[in-house]
Image (cartoon, rainbow, N blue to C red; front, side, top):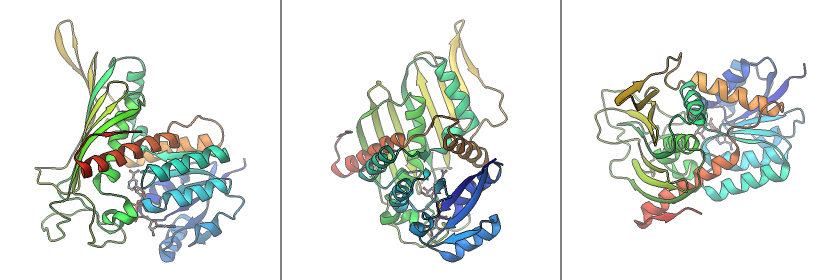
Length: 352
Ligand SMILES: NC(=O)c1ccc[n+]([C@@H]2O[C@H](COP(=O)([O-])OP(=O)(O)OC[C@H]3O[C@@H](n4cnc5c(N)ncnc54)[C@H](O)[C@@H]3O)[C@@H](O)[C@H]2O)c1
């Protein structure tokens, strides 16, 4: 069997989840690694037995045998690397957020169309077992019409620093980092309706709090304390299906504990996806809660990435239609832009 030859650009933390997932697939070979930090690229290549190392993705893309590329760089390189890879004839799996803003995402979508190559966005949470089971239930009409969703991903002390908190490399704070995952879950489960308007507020009152003691947190690979992004963002997003999503995300907030909560409400029933999958309805005039019996009732990174990367490879081999097309990444960037815009103006923003 001819193996699919894959390259990974950006060899930091999330690269390893992609690489572990590729390694599980007999039909894939990782042939090149690229990072502007040469030491990091070399170390990754050595650990994973990757034969070629680059510091310039343009040089790497000259390798004709590369068929597919994972883009796992800082957010500010997603658009330029993905566009160059598509133009070089490669299929691309680009990490979330698709880009820094909707204008960049639009160019990425246009390039995918022009070149005819696949650009998949890494909304990995769609691939959690709990999410896949919920989608199956929704597709069978178990919730009825979903009219409201509440999505919350809040951390008390969780600004990773480094590029994450540097707006010119990240595009923003918890909204663009955590928010895109959970707004996307509501969008995807709600049947991908079109966002029509947004009211949002982003707060920057608390800062990174690097001086805090007594607990540990995740520090980005190139940690620094430069911080010009928001601490916390809240929004209401209305969709043309009639669904409204209430959203909040924080990196720093005075709350009791970190929480991830995803709840959807339909005309026939409600559901909680995270922390664990549970359904709520009425039956025979009783209120009934149902808990599916699952190996993984909550999202796990290993399982999610294995399924996401597996699906990407199936698409590259022409064996599946892409569940996460780049157009979905663009829709999310339009919502992100509108939330930041609404926060600036203090008014509701119409999403184009
Ligand atoms: N899907 C998820 O659950 C999830 C989780 C965390 C991060 N991410 C996304 O993955 C991406 C990377 O995050 P991370 O935590 O791995 O960051 P990281 O800092 O650990 O790794 C990013 C790497 O990209 C490299 N890089 C930056 N610009 C580059 C360029 N132009 N060419 C080559 N290399 C370049 C950096 O040197 C760094 O080594 C981000 O877009 C982030 O939003 C996704």
